[in-house]
Amino acid sequence: MERESLARYFYNLLKSQDHITDQTAMYLNLTINIIIVLIASYIVFKLLRYFSLQIVHKLASKTKTNFDDYLVQNKTFIYLSNLITISLVSALIPKILIDFPEYEIYLEKTLNVAVAVIIIWVIRSVLMTIKDFLKTINSFKDKPIESYIQVFMIVVWIIGVIIIFSIITGKPLLKFLTALGAFSAVLLLVFKDTILGFVASIQVTVNDTVRLGDWITMEKYGADGDVFEINLASVKVRNFDNTITTIPTYYLISDSFKNWRGMSVSGGRRIKRSILIKANSIKFLSESDVENLQKIQLITEYITDRQSKIDQFNNEQNIDKSLAINGRNQTNFGAFRQYVDEYLATRPDINKEMMMMTRQLPPTAQGIPLEIYAFSSDKAWINYERIMAGIFDHLLAAIPYFDLETYEAPTGHDVKSISFKTDETSK
Image (cartoon, rainbow, N blue to C red; front, side):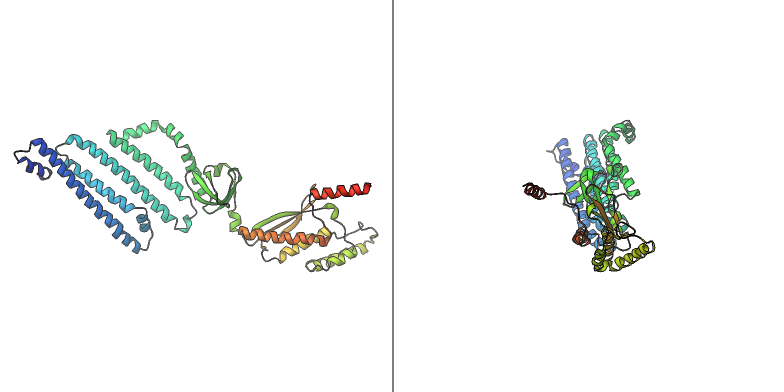
């Protein structure tokens, strides 16, 4: 009764005046009550906002954990102050509309909807805080936390929308959940990409397929760069030309791609490149050739020791060396392969603990490929390219010292020179 008398205080005060009708007193009482509630709500809102912006911020900055700092950063306390203010107004609605019960239900529904929306934003701010906080922990830095946050938010919004419709229509929540089952097929169709993305995110995390910061190559989508975001629907790759490629998350488990993480965490980056040697430039080494190659310091010991064993074998077997093909012989190609091995072993930028070899591949129409297989110690792209270029610059310059030739398709100038010589000969 005291509350009712307080809500009708101005009504009773105005009703005592002879010139004010009963209906006018009711409307004036309602107007004054609304103004008082709005002023009180504004004061409460300002006090709570000041508390959240000043006192809470200072307390958060003094604590050892960063979690409360992220709560402040994501405006959690501001949303809570809004929620408290609207809840206060909602609690006062029955009092200020005591003489107008027919309007009370509409205003209460509006405020309840506002409360539901603000609660969703509070939950969102807390989830964003959890995401930001987990990213500061080393074990979670490379995990797709955004995907799970997005899934939780989708669930929260679905539940929130159902609750809002239940408030607006006045029907029990259970009926909406029952009706939702009937529309499950439609929901599955609408959220197909979301569901696939969620499943893909779980598989990517569990199988450790891709992490944030991984260098991946997916030629089908033109992706060649570092992964900087993994969310529910897509994976974003910053390519080396600073363009950004967006790949649907599901395709990371349905299509093939190359992840360079194994190279990044290993002791080196692979060098695998061939030099094409003209087959007709390969020959047995004569005595003068052996003497010349013995002057190359990296293979002096090898050439000398190898030739000594060959000569010993040929003498023991009474080999007729009037023809070079008889018996055992060294070749300029074999000597060059040994030189490449020795040269790689002297380079400090090659990881000696990983595989290092020079191998001859099957002959092709362009010549015989000599493949260098090794790992550079420096894995940075620019330095890696410089190391590889330096190696092949040296080897290409060294080839003539072994009387070898590299394959090179004839140019227009070469064809013109041959044609000119043919014409001169015919004359």
